[in-house]
Length: 162
Image (cartoon, rainbow, N blue to C red; front, side, top):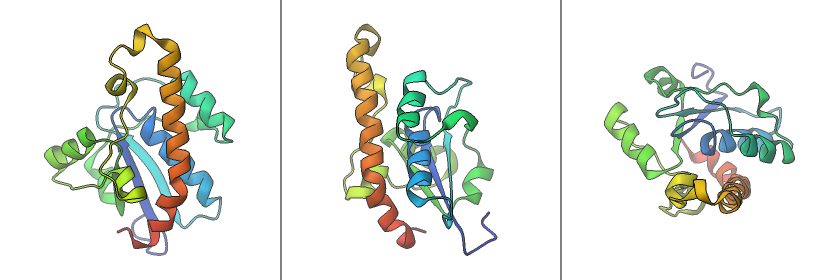
């Protein structure tokens, strides 16, 4: 994809590629529409084999995105080489990108709002999430809502991202 300079490539990175990065991928794809000039994808630092959580899938479907074709991917040098813009969803992703690949990547919220705020995974935000399903579900919904709400800000900055 990088060979076609009329198209740019955005890669969102999180831990498992089943929640935050995949939400950002589908939200940006929807926002840009079918004629987008950007190739948008996602990957996970760890990406141990697992499916998108049913709640995340349902929330994406509610917003008109169908993640049925999503294939979880582990971050590789090859994926990074193809990306013009790599975006970390959390600080741990920034640190892993630097440590494992020697790459400095901005946070999603840094691009959208100029804030150094990471988007936390459910277990980071709610250490007892397994004991409080309602609170965990509400948190996941709030993250999906936040990412979708931030995407217009992200897209407005795309031409300047390299």
